[in-house]
Length: 167
Image 1: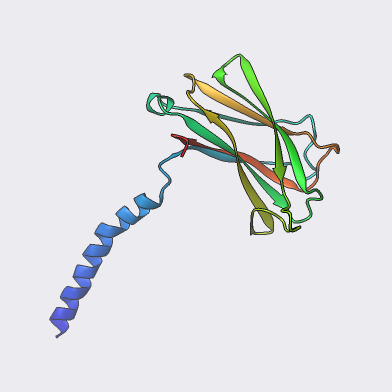
Image 2: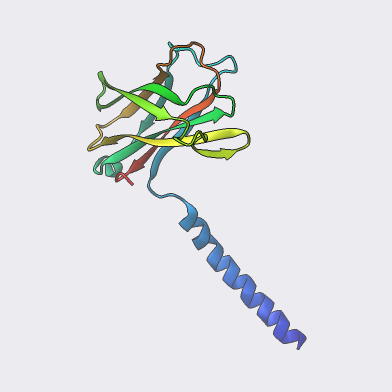
C-alpha cells in the first residue's frame, strides 16, 4: 500500500513538473510588444509636462499592424468626469509627430467611476491608435493633458500598451 502511494506521489510530481511550464507560458500575453507606465509627480501633472515612452520593434513585428492603448491610473479623488489628452507619436516618420486629441471618460452615465479599482487607484485602458505599418527604429510616444488646470491632481500613472497584429 505504501509503495503504491509513493508511486502515485512521484507520478503526480512528474505531471506537475511537465505541466507547470506549459501553464506559465500560456498565461503570457504573446501579443504584447510594449507595456509601461510612467509615474506622475506627487505635486500633480503640469500641462507642459509630456510623458514620454519609447519602444522599438523587431523586423517580424514591423510586418504586422499594431494597436496602441493609453492607460491611466487615477486616484479616487480625481475631480473630473473626463480627461482630455494630446497623444503624439513618430511611428510613421522619425522627424514628424502625428498628434491626436483624445477624451477619456472617467465617469459613466450612472455617475460611477470607470475602470478597475485596486490598491486605491482606478485603472482605465482605452484604444487610441492603430499603426498599419511601423518604421524601422525607435518609436516615441508623447502624452500630455489638455485640462484647464495645472498642475492636474489625481493622475498617478500614465502608460501605453502596444500589441502586434492589432490584438
